[in-house]
Length: 268
Ligand SMILES: C[S@@+](CC[C@H](N)C(=O)[O-])C[C@H]1O[C@@H](n2cnc3c(N)ncnc32)[C@H](O)[C@@H]1O
Image (cartoon, rainbow, N blue to C red):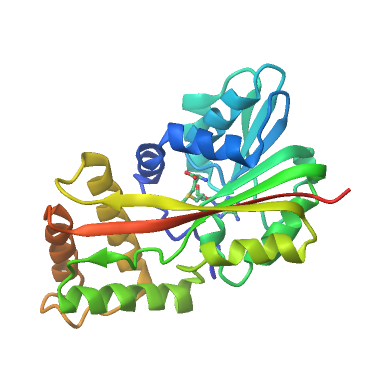
């Protein structure tokens, strides 16, 4: 995020985040990472609050969860939909000192570091200052983001690569953040580091409503924000957008995205 603006910001972003979260998968991942009853959890870059709510279910009884996000819209949405005893939300920027929010036994950061290609390691180091010694840090992100479709026309293939290259250069976005997570915990001296690799998207056959909404929104916002010129299409972005939508609705298309999870314990 080269500027102070979240790349995916839009009127519908809270809804997009809400629809794309699979509670069963993320609870399984958090259990794998070592979340336990009674813990104080920080969900950093919490989005709509759905992930915070689901993490909080895993720490009851006796636990507490705080979702922190830079966006007043996200925090407003989270408070309206998920605020409950033992679960709260606060505005905050994870690039700045987080001590006013207290310290945590378990910190979860999902799909946030990808927006900070040049600052991701500094962010991880910063959040470590509010993780208690022996506490668990769990980083969850994608690899080859948006670059693993099969069945694209040559024009669409070229444009997708162009969009992602532009986002890397102009918006500090990192389509390859997943593969870097291990080095962050390694370099910070974490112990008991464990990695997991699975498919976040695995899309073939007839399109599901939620996948269509998420991907079309993602491509619309990312495509517009990238500054890519879409010269492959006679009507520029509109041609690209229409062709991507047709590709994505075609049951022959195949799309996957690797999800990488890295968890470790902060040294005493
Ligand atoms: C793609 S969403 C992921 C939301 C949630 N973690 C999830 O997994 O659904 C990224 C979120 O990070 C937030 N964000 C971006 N930069 C941030 C920062 N510097 N500090 C706190 N939150 C940030 C955005 O507002 C957005 O809600």
